[in-house]
Length: 395
Image (cartoon, rainbow, N blue to C red; front, side, top):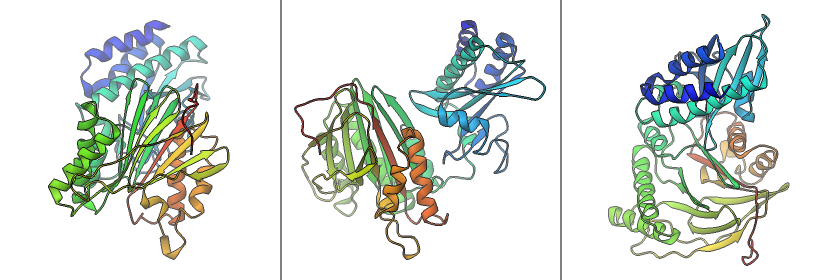
């Protein structure tokens, strides 16, 4: 039934940005005979799915993490749920370029055939693209995502993010900020361009709005250099000079800049007093030792060098801020001594989009579910590897 996704696509192009759910519902009723369609979006912690049509449901609302919808969200595959009266609720992933936005539920009469499910999945794909685009024009979908009010610093940080996951060639990248509703200075940024994936992870200094402002300046300086065709070194040096001439060495930002050739698996890196970089290969978690250089903004006219290492097919990289590896709740040993590696090994069979949540959940459990004392960033990069270079020595 290709007419279903085509009809949805045409209707969404002319719908107001805040009325995409209602528009998709109307078209799916008409083309697939659906009784109704609903959209559920992931909250900022990716701990639950919440309805767009009625976002003011209390915690523990209609779709907590154990439901059929969550299975669809985690697996990124359609899940069918036959109701007692013979109707079927089809849960379809709302995803675009590897970023998981939520789930579309379409209630259909009877047990649908494969063509109907595929048509509904295509319609979900069209809706995901439209919601991603509409997010700049309306607050409706963001209101549904938040389970409490964000601090001003967190509002700035989430607006600054490129997304929470992206797929690019042989690479899948995902990241998570915590505490989601009050995060201050820690951050990540990325961009894909041809066969190149650029990733930066910042270990922000300070707290609250001041930290968020410093991070915003740093990220935008690196973006300015990158979008002007600048190399990793030029990105680091422009950001460092920008911070220094604004704060005269009184503020600085520890940053890791990575550039992955997503075809060959070659990684170029600038380690500016960075967050930690670890590799999961099989069941072994190994820190990747890079030459640490000065944090961005510490001195005027600081110059940086690039290092290279090579990934093997199936390698997974984790980048974590000091709020993860150095966390010491209630006088325990730091999370990064043993517990962090155990959490990373536990992600072996999970995609990167699930792995960041696993490490964060284990971090919260390590704190006995008390509030985190410091900002925490976890970024996970998987490289499947369709080819590799033989002229670069790996770590």
